[in-house]
Image 1 (cartoon, rainbow, N blue to C red):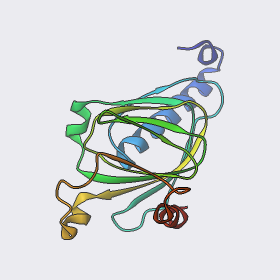
Image 2: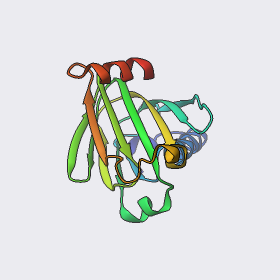
Image 3: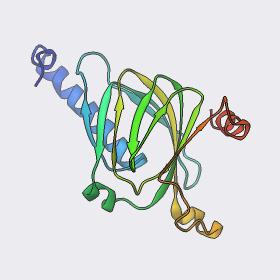
Image 4: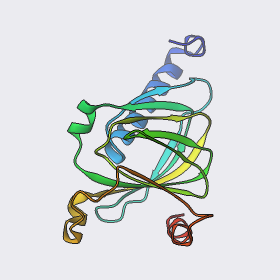
Length: 168
């Protein structure tokens, strides 16, 4: 327990712990299974807004500073899915499959739920994620051609700019 937690009234701590539980469950259910470590307990937790469309899990996130790890055991638990991630404020440093990418405004990250890795959100982050089950892509015969992690910069790639504009 951090000093900030120790100074909170019992009911306030319970509310923070409940919010933390829901935040972690949303990350697991709407993105992928991962271990999350809050970098600080001062200030508000993040929030999320669900905007699903059929099988597409669309989520708007306001993220606090946090670190995450996705190991082999967690990766084996999840169904295969494609994740499309954009940011409108802040940054997230993602290390997957021996590659480091930085999600920031103007970037689009496409990844699958297969690789293991880590991430760090050093400060507040506003992002949108779209989780597409691989079963929804079955008719497109993507096979193993889905990248472990692909970063597209909208400033350098007109097609990435169109995709980003469509997603935001």
